[in-house]
Image (tube, rainbow, N blue to C red; front, side, top):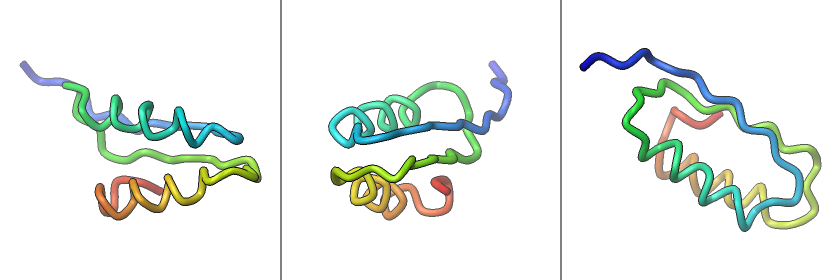
Length: 63
């Protein structure tokens, strides 16, 4: 079965504990995704570190 290629947009603010779970769900879905754009609204927790970890794992698919 052919799935459409998707671009995913994720907005976050101080949700580092949920962000990793949400991103793993996106990355492990059966849909074919091209890139994930994460908009961090000046979080004061470790959201940016989670984003950097996911970017290192999934290379150029996280913007």
